[in-house]
Length: 288
Image (cartoon, rainbow, N blue to C red; front, side, top):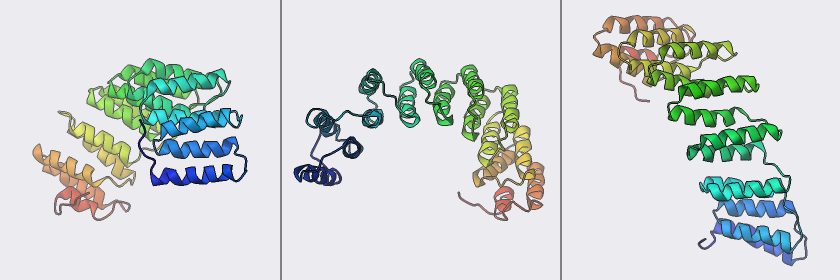
């Protein structure tokens, strides 16, 4: 049951009712603005009352935006049943959500780990002409990675490419982190190669995924150093946390000479900030 209206909701309600009382006619756009404000304030009961008022009192037919307001509100509340009920109501009226609203539903489905339904919705988007974007696919990919479903994640990556939706760094970073965690190093290198082959240039975040992940894997410190060196060679400044983690692991393993080599390489790079060198050689502790 909704509580008393907050001041942020009372003002638009007051203005809206004042407009009606002064004889001005409200249109669908005005009602949509009001309902969006109410839903944002979690006053769903009042928003539904205004939706009913719009249809019965003013004989105004809701448009796709009217329904999408409620879909997004129910997604925010993690109310799957109400969300799908509104979506079905839209379909009966031959109205379709936009990609932004579809993505909100995908996010909720994946939050509830309903991967089959998420794929159904993805197909529905395509069939209805609402082209899924990278965010759409990344939402499902994140669930596969969470469930450690590597094969399904890689199949989804291939589907993105078939559907002419270019993966972004977040796509690859999620998959790389999962592959490293599972010890699938051959697949990790394969995906890393694809990362560069699709016109993307790995950023500091991508290298951090590799270095941090490999540092935590037994016997992979050499590979971690290789990726760190690769990053420095490309002139990409590493994160402070990456420097400190790699330095700490090398010290733990008694590989101080590798630290010196990395410091020398960093010192000769004109794009590596001076304050990063002490973070690697340990001469000064720097907090992120």
